[in-house]
Amino acid sequence: MADSESLPGGVTVVGLGYVGLPLALAFAKKLPTTGFDLDAPRVDGLRAGIDHNSEVDSATILSSNLTLTTDVSCIADAEFIVVTVPTPVTDDHEPDLSLLASVSASIGDQLRGRSEGLPAPIVVYESTTYPGCTEEFCGPIIERESGLRSGEGFFLGYSPERTNFGDAEHTLETVVKVVSGQTSAVAARVAETYGLIAKAGTHMAQSIKTAEASKVIENVQRDLNIALFNELSIIFDRMGIQSSDVFDAAATKWNFHRYQPGLVGGHCIPVDPYYLAYAAARTGYDADVVLTGRAINEGMPEYVAEKVVSLVRGRGGEPDSARVLVLGATFKKNVADTRNSKAIVLAELLAGRFGVVHVYDPYFDPEDGLERRFEVVGDPAGSGREYDLVVVAVGHSEFDVLEDQLPELLSPGGFVFDLTGTLAQNEKVASTTSVWSL
Image (spheres, rainbow, N blue to C red):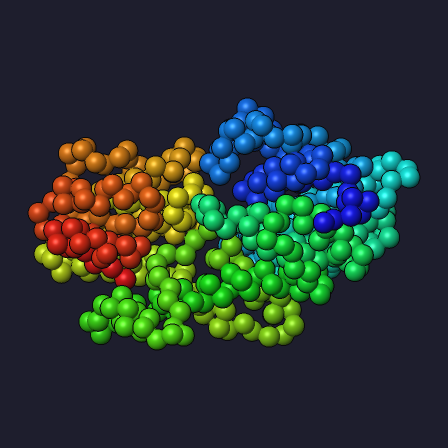
């Protein structure tokens, strides 16, 4: 049980996106909590109980004690500040720290006007970044803008987010929370504060750098494992062997760890390896294994597009006149997030090779302001439309009902390209439909 005297009087969460909103709502159950975001339409929507990210239901938002604001002055007298802004990469695969820099500058600017007599605030970063970023990049910006010294006028902490969108089992409250602080006392206070909402407990890292490093390698490991299975699927395809059959056989060994080959998108797995590689390069070391795995996964949409073309031609079809339906546009199953979605990349590549490419995804909002070469359509079930090829790019639960209807969606001689590895397990589909998978 946390010592109430060591807990902050309140929490201010900066950034109300996929990570920040659930975090702020969780803290609001335990402490007075303010959620700050500069995006006025986002805040207005949340005040009305609408999460356009489709991660939090209306009742949860409206019943919360969370204070929502676009007024940056809420930071000035805050005692426990948590930063949850995105940290993407640039087109050159370099860390894009622009949002971290902007938020850190705003925090510093607000702390300059902090009321006298208040204790030094703790600023905890949750944004994924490279080891050393919090103390060597963010801290100095706060110092510059506030006129305060890090470790005296304010203290730093780091607690990496472990959000797994669309996963009802592994949630903020059910996974262990890694925490760290600039000093042992700060780390203890960070642990006690997060302990209020992390029911699975907290793990205190030895340092902020250690906590930062732990975050990036979680996703580097997954990226490399998937890259291995993607490469294996390519090799076995060239050998005329069904990769899933190979994996089934190998999985009978007790220490074999199986992964599903396919598209790798989202905000973490395709991004974090570049942050680690960047940090490694600063030490003079080239993270060759990390970047090779990343290159394999980045190349999968192009590989799949070319494979689809060869399969169509191998069946006597002509891509220019073929009709294609892609099921799924978001980056993973049962989420609305399209950040770094390789399903969209694949659909664009297919649109450049085939006569007609339709995309159906119940989570996808086509009004994103981007020009697409493919056409977004509604539920194809019962539409009367037929396709020469159906590509199952994302395994949304809503697509389960379409499995039995696949024969009706396919023209004579049409087939299914399954990137999710699920259709092979459906005996009815396997017996009535030609299915190719990685």
